[in-house]
Image (tube, rainbow, N blue to C red; front, top):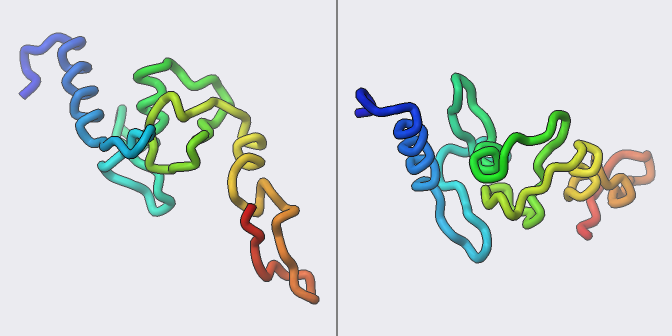
Length: 121
């Protein structure tokens, strides 16, 4: 129950509940709470769902600069370790990722020009 608590006490309780939904895996802090189909952790905050990694970054580092994404330097979508997250442009995040959007040179096309395979780096 949170009645009678100061705003700071409520915030501390919420933060403790947040970090309780993690586990250590090497140097990664993995989210064990709700996840989206794409593997990213999700947390309900201020009336809407947001990425658990974004919430962790904002708790420990501060606001994410306007217009930037958080790149997982460890390539682990479940990781919410703020030390593994770097604010970058969407273009840079896609370029660093392992997707055809950011790496068109990895697309293998068939004789008709259709995507047939994807070269892993």
